[in-house]
Length: 391
Image 1 (spheres, one colour):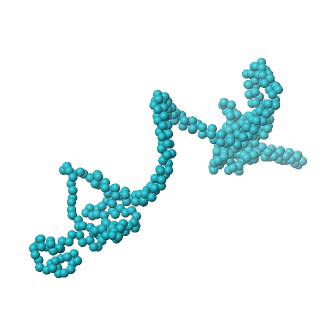
Image 2 (cartoon, rainbow, N blue to C red):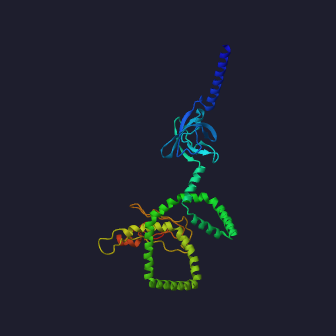
Image 3 (cartoon, rainbow, N blue to C red):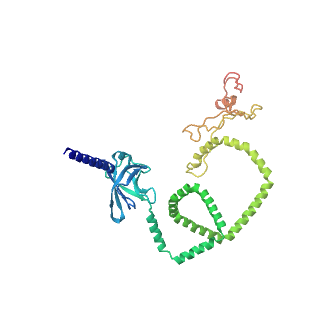
């Protein structure tokens, strides 16, 4: 009896070991996180237990495949929990295979800008791409060949063969030239792609400006018609312009040296005028009130007359003119002179001073004037030298 029980226990133990090993192999004792990939199709050789990879490393397996309407398929994935933090929330999926005839697997593809959030349990991922399979290629090839007329195909192939007969060297040189041309164009592909990308915007701008461009063309047509209609007057104008140019050439050629001399002589005068330009400007601005002021209500000319004392007589050589003034241009308050005021008199070293000492003017304290006004007065006569007692 003991031997029977020992044998039974041995068999049970062996069965338990085998079951545990099979369960470990199947992953029955491993906790996984579910995710779903929805693709246009599952593809051939896609079975449950297919691998799920991220960056080439296996992170789970396909638990089941569910067919959907329209040929679509839902792949239910079982992902290892420790790999969930490595999968961004905006991940996509491709159904790929290592070879044409190899079994499929699911490749999770993170985008260029991965989301900071990780994928969550039960998340549905859209499948972007399914590897082209050999049966698909044959199916498309059969579809094309079924629409091709063998007679026309034979005729086309014969024409191509006849066209290339004896021209192999030229065709080879053409391929070499094409390769060289493509090698030159290849570095500019990025710029070409950019040009193609911005071409719609440029064409839209041209489309928006098309009415204005057409208006410009119409106006140019009108101008052209006007020139055609007035061609006789235009010819006369051009002939006159040519005659004027010939006359001007003769005048300038004959008077070139005198004109050059005049220009050189005007340089000092123009330099002085430029230097005293501010004073000339404010002087002219000071005359504006007189030019723009109201006229007299009574027709005629109004004069304000007054008498001034006589100036000192000219004395030689002290009154010879001098050019020794300094200080540059001065406006002396012009053009805005305050009310009941006048610009100050500026004394300059030019050899003339109307306020210099010694100007006696009219001598009112003379003996003849006193006697004419008051009769004979005692005392000596008053003279210009102020000699004697006052009369």
